[in-house]
Length: 354
Ligand code: KG4
Ligand code: ZN
Image (cartoon, rainbow, N blue to C red; front, side, top):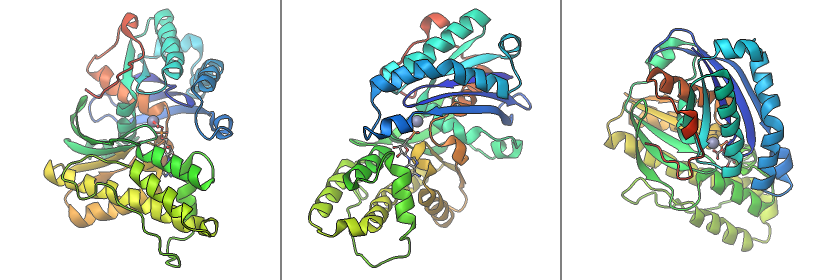
């Protein structure tokens, strides 16, 4: 099976072609192309994504990105029509005017090439980044049910994945998402956008430096549920900076403590959830799962606390927004013949994992 994936939820215009090496639930998925046109440079000057600007960029970029993705996979417009089996596209959550570009393009291609379409929830796409492996043993290793910590710029969720397409959200953020918290913290320190990678880099430089004792709270860590809250942490950082005349000299130390506060809460709740639901697999998903410390510390904690569980992380290439993850999720929908008629393919404003 050959699937074209399209992703335009936020500020990345992306298209990808994936192929299954052997059909079925344990098929290994090979990424033939994964093209991403990022708008970060444009939005950087505003300190965040400007929806109107993002939408215009998607319109300009979508066809060149799809064209590149076909060419990289050895396809042309003519052969794509014959060889592709389906087109998967992210329908939400995301910026409505950004999503429309991807959805309408997928619809037109599906209509003219007479190909089945698959609307994909963007969060489900992030989850399926864990299923992209050319090695079938890796896929067989993913034993469901699994607990998935999905952490991105827009979402922070603990998801119980009971089977393919079967999800239960057991906890989520009550205010800012983890990635959003990183972005806002970086903005407070004036160190750039997007905040996650920059904070992580600054923190890495002081990882063993105990020179400055900075203490930030671990919000909701001891509350008896699986919800999160990060806006208080951001406010605590704001006051800490305000009360410290020399904070500019200590940015790496503040970055370190902020990152560690987020990581501590994420790990504590994920381990608790895996223990409660007795899952054999724990996975990370979403842009924040690119964070090296989160990956390493979670791996260590799983090994110590639930040694029988396996810990899966997506390849770094597929953590932040990309279309291979949308195509991978689409593949599993296609196996179930779960297609979306073009007449019904539209932005899902209240997109929820079902
Ligand atoms: O999944 P994603 O690309 O877009 C959304 O669906 O929101 O996630 C983007 C978010 C941003 O907030 C960014 O700061 C964060 O992921 N991020 C990171 C890292 N790389 C990206 N956060 C922490 N550490 C990182 N290394
Ligand atoms: Zn995303």
